[in-house]
Image 1 (cartoon, rainbow, N blue to C red):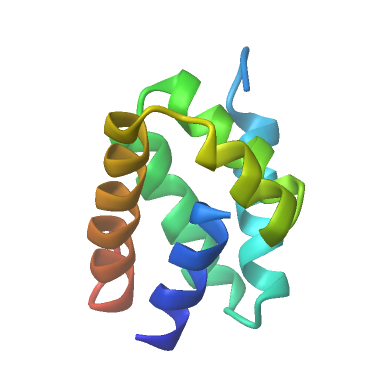
Image 2: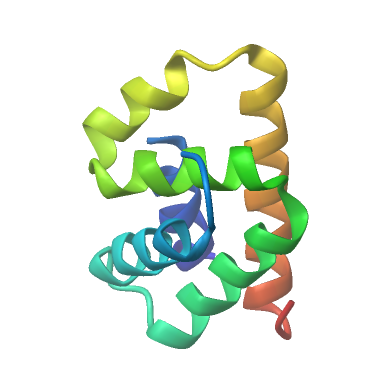
Length: 100
């Protein structure tokens, strides 16, 4: 659960392809002490769950670090933040308990 909470915290903290966003998500996640397999699972799950624009926004926010990334996400409409939070919880639980 600590890994899921850490990943969620990072997510709460783009446009074109999603490769850079995925790399940013995995990097930020592993830097928070989660293992690479878990972080890759989370990034893959978010990529499948979120539309490309939202996924890239999460990637950009995570690349900026927790504080600056949080500022990016704070500027989003409430519905967009809720979509991201819901996806993080769902994907995080799936990855923690058996993979996405």
